[in-house]
Image (cartoon, rainbow, N blue to C red; front, side, top):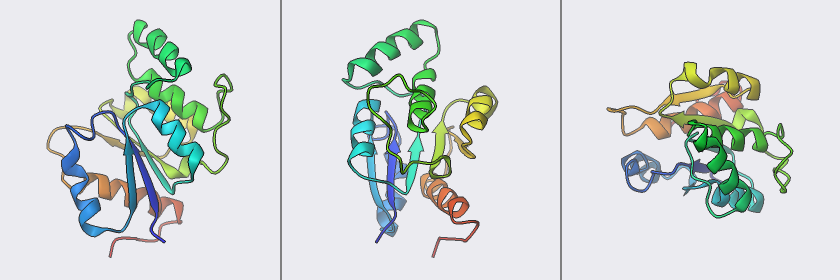
Length: 164
């Protein structure tokens, strides 16, 4: 069975679709992408994934909890805060949301792929024990997303190389 991958990225369909080409070309992963937190929560509660790639600048979707939270954090000038709050909920460090996060999720399954510099969010990622980070910038290789998935799977498996 192929490893299941969920990419949570608001602009994936429009701005970053070139990054998904190698994933579909190689056909090694059962790959899904969602564009907001509400949809991500629904996917995560429906079935497990082996890899989660998360942007930290995410729209809330239609769930009132995430919408209210989004309005509060963006009013404070921190667009990246909603994605961080989502990660805190996902890794069971925030009990405010009505849904219990899925028990199969662990920090070693998660990679953060965002425009923020690592230094800006390092303290939060360290607190969450998320070890895989990639800065989204101009000129990324078309295999960036594929490489990120393989890095997560490699770390999760204790260093065994995956690409064939």
